[in-house]
Image (tube, rainbow, N blue to C red; front, side, top):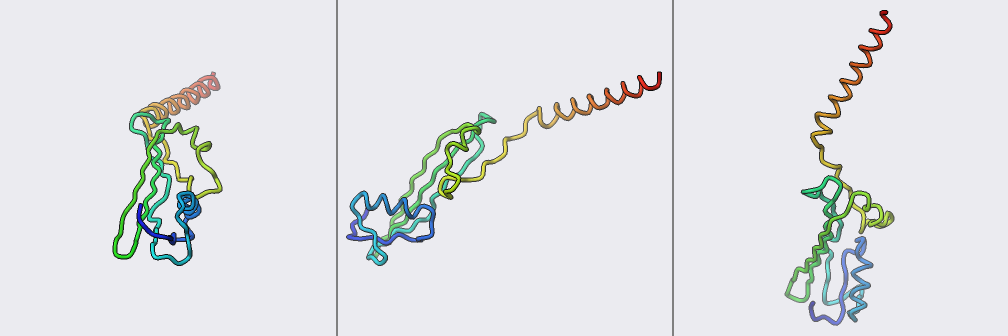
Length: 139
């Protein structure tokens, strides 16, 4: 990664702060409040998008972007992971108490059934019911 004897991780209010600190400590890199090197959490989030071929699936993208600043050099570290989840599995994949794992889920795309067939069937059913009601009452 970079050669520093200790690191400060900013911002401390980030939902991913504890995770980054734990990973650094596991690699033997001490984290201190004041250090010659800074590790800035630029982005750390889960995002959901519509899957191009299935209405019942979502494309999940996990992004972690860090910026290291040491003396006179700056580096960017970016990790992106993508997978596909069923809409019904989203609740099992998220931890509701953690901002790190939750994200808004987009609504399913509308289909021919939603836009045309369903309203036509409903209107035809109501019209048939009303026609039968008035036809039977008038006899």
